[in-house]
Amino acid sequence: MIKPRIILKEIKPYFDSPEAIIITGMRRTGKTTLLNYIYGQVDSKNKLFLDLENPLNRKYFEEENYERIKGSFELLGIDFSQKAFLFLDEIQFVKNLPSIVKYFIDHYKVKFYLTGSASFYLKNLFQESLSGRKYIFELFPLTFSEFLQFKEVSLKIPEDARDITQPMFETIAPLYEEYILFGGFPGVVLKRNVEEKKKALKEIFSSFFLLEIIQLGDFRRNEAVRDLILLLIQRMGSKLDIQKISRELAISRPTLNEYISFLEGTYFIKRIKPFTKGKDAEIRKRTKVYVCDTGLANNIVQLDMGKLFENSIFQNLRMKGELNYYQRKSGVAIDFILDKKVAYEVKLKAQKSDAKKLKTMAGELNLESFKIVSKNYCPEVENAVYGFMI
Image (cartoon, rainbow, N blue to C red; front, top):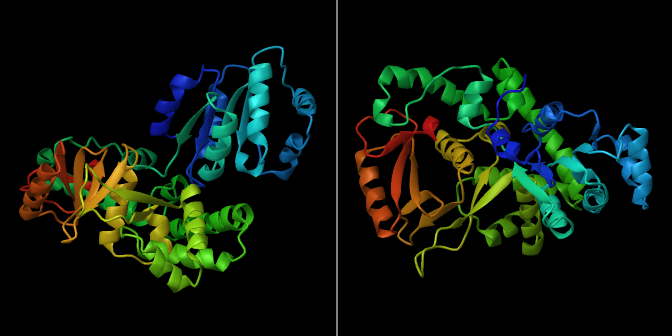
């Protein structure tokens, strides 16, 4: 039985639509599992599942004449005289796939379910050739609520932090600590002990580096990309100084920007822009960088809890909408602003003074509300929430 994922509720309304459904996201976030589940839900025998990571399956798509591809599908059991369903996993390995998908949608009304791990490729190519014929959904590592379901832990967490007693907090805290330290990759969460989790995280990174960077990226200097990854993890939650990083790695700024865009396009990192509402000269222009998963980051570079906690909050907030940050030249800052409406400040242990400062800043920026996000117990702080409530 599939473990519940939030994204499934978002996809289900489009099961009966004619458009292709594309599920994209970082490797090992559960795209193949989700695709297999949807395959099982489709009440038809006229369906086909192909894993395009397998070179033999890619051969079906090498024909320039798409009718010959149709013939191959027919040999595999697809009847195009009735509604057909094609499930294709890891589509980034077939460069001409968007035009093939368009052809079969337009000529045979095939319903496609597709997965891929490189958004820069999928979004650019599919936007040009499948305009109006697709829906794209992004799958990320588990949120904390999904983590609890994968662990088969039944906990009803109150919506108001004031309703969380200290015994209740101490029940949740060890689980949340595990979530921060080892992250939300499903295969890691399901491992039974620390050593198995660490081994699984190493394998995830090795797979990402081999299949995305070496194979898909095809860069001339893979070691420079590796060093950039290490540097970005060390600086997660910080603003990027492209000129400084360029000097440190001895690579040109255009090349550095290409590498960073690739890492973001394959979901390893995410940059968030500064918040701006009107002409505010105090907002700095640099983006801040976060990593896809705290467990993966911490397994590559040993990080302090402050960085890990902030990155974990980022992982859960990104599911809720657009994120920005705010910082004045004086150094006063807000960690996250969600949908230009709600301010979030992240603290290991929130204090009343933190809430007072944030309330003032949120008011000056005309934001609708604010929340202080604390890792530790803080029952007396106004508008406080705990990390496990995000």
